[in-house]
Image 1 (cartoon, rainbow, N blue to C red):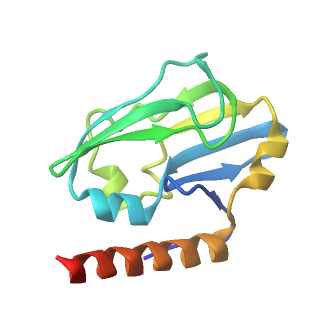
Image 2: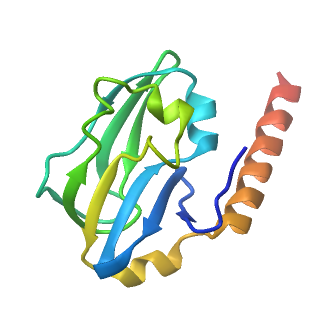
Image 3: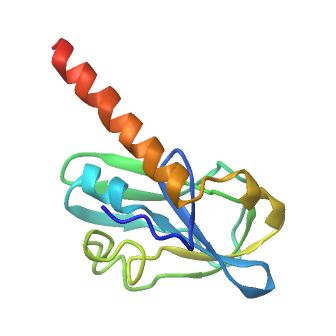
Length: 139
């Protein structure tokens, strides 16, 4: 499981790569794609759509489930990954690279400060996995 150190992470398993000029790239984490399984459909927002932090901005459908993607930060869509609707499995294959979903112009870059760094996210995922194992043991 990968947790690139140049990214910030949410508890809903989105990642953000902050770039120059208050731009950021958003996707779902390696953990998220692993939990979802084979991704078969992606619905992305339109360029120029505006959204607030924690607002639903995209949908990912896998053979197991349909999952909403939430905005880790507020902003305006500059670009979407046009390859994903035709090749949604790219998210499974390269969630932090070619599987990126949305490029935005952040309206409040300070929101990034409330997100987890790689070490914090890795710890969070480990705790979630332990909780899931504990739950499975009770069954």
